[in-house]
Length: 302
Image (cartoon, rainbow, N blue to C red; front, top):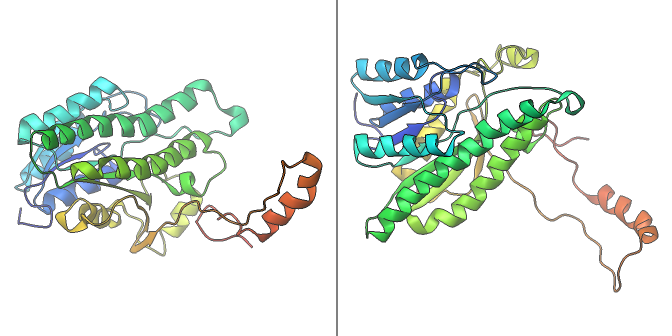
C-alpha cells in the first residue's frame, strides 16, 4: 500500500471485523498504518465468538500489501484489553492510535429491560472503551516517564442516541453518553503525555442498524455506508490532528459536525435558601427561557 497520512503509525481498532470498524481498519491500512484488528466475533447482541471476522479483515489488508494482525480478545475484560494493547506493542514496537469502536445492541424500553440487557451493553461499550483506554494510557505514560515523546491519538465512538437520546435505547444511549463524557475527561488527563482524545457520533447503515426503517430510507438519499465515516477517523488518528482534542464530531455521510455539549443556560439566584413553594414560579420560567433539547437527529425542537 502507498504512503498516506497514517504512514507507519500503529493502530488498534476494536470491533473491526464488520461494519464501521472494518471500514476504519481498511482505511487506516490504505493510508500506510500497521493495524491490529480486534473483534470478538460475536453476534449483534454480543452472543457467541469467532476468530473469523478479525482474521478475514487482517487477511484482506495483508493481501492488499498492508500490515495487519488479528486479535480476538474481549475488550470488556480488563485483562483482554491489556492483551490487546500488549499485542500491538510487541508486534509493531508501539502504539500510536486507539480506535474504540466495538459495540452491541440489545434495544428494549426501560420497563422491559433485563439486568443482563443492561449489563452486557454497558460492559461492551463503556467498560470496553475505558479498559483499552486505561492500558493504552499506561503505555504512553511509561514512555513519557522514560523520556520518550508520544504523538498518540484516541478516537472513541459515541452515538446520536447518547448525546441526543432515543427511546428504546436506554442501555446503549447511557453507555454512549458516558463515552462522550469520558472523552472530554481523558483529553484533559492525557494531554501531558502527548495524547489527544476525541470521539465521533456516526450514523451509518450497518448490521446494527440495517433493520431500522428510518435508516434504510435515509440511505436512499445519502451515503450512509461505513466507509463514509472513516476518513474523519483516519485524519483524527494522524499527526495533522494534534491540535484537536476533547471534541465530539457528528458524522453522517459526507457531513461532519462539531457537537456542542452541555453549557450553563438561564439561571436564578436568591439571597437565602429557596423554599419549594417559591420554585413553582421560578423553575418553569427558567425552562421557558432555555433552549429546547435537541431531537434524536440533533436538531432543535420547536
